[in-house]
Image (cartoon, rainbow over all chains, first blue to last red; front, top):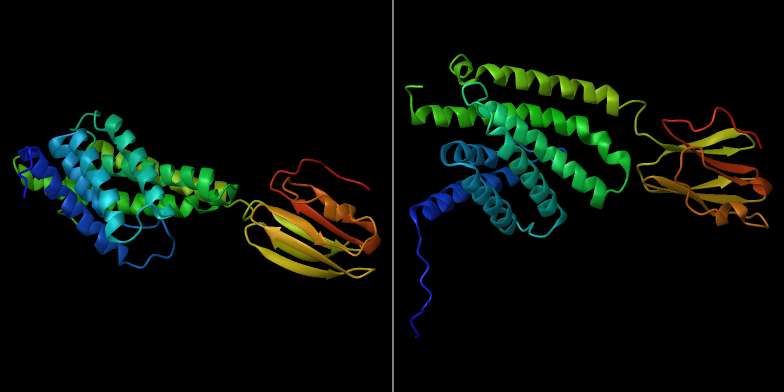
Length: 174
Length: 125
């Protein structure tokens, strides 16, 4: 066997991203098993991991974990390149864009719950926008928005609180 | 419950409150009068069927000459078949605008779309 001349150095941040992404993917798979009355109404548990990464290690790593989660998670549950994958990708991109701005808000005032809510609402915004443009080219999509918004509110708060709990355990002094 | 409350920062309450009121507002705003559009099928001015425009359905309406077939798809409706001699209402194809009407006069059947925003105060034929 020829010895490969390509040498990929794996840094500590790479290992960290991989570990977080693995946790997020595991949550995605666990969540896929939860029955949902409406496609799109999901707890979004993997977002807890993304929030923790965002607030511990910054936006770039959150983008890595989040996109790895979407791609690898969809491969695991057999949704890769299915409509659900693109909806998930659109939602993730929208919430990462919003988080890039919202994470600049003063931390003392806006905690993980705020970030989680911003991300959750951006997520449904991105999904509904893509669904309206591509999957259901009809304003009937907006009929479901109140339901999505209500679930984003509920799970946004819960996920934010869980992330806040983890981050609080990092440095109990604060 | 109590152990979770300190995790909320001051503005978290504000953000949650704004989000909750947005959700509250979205219900009456987007659920006003149910799904925006529906198709109304009449025979001799009598309503024989009202179909929401968020489903796919095909119905048959007994008219003066025979059976007219009305077809509904998300956001649009048409007269798919009609026994009339000129087929004007069939040739109109898919109706998509609120207040659009296809009239199969010989068969005494009309298909009209009703929308949330009425484009006209009244229509006469």
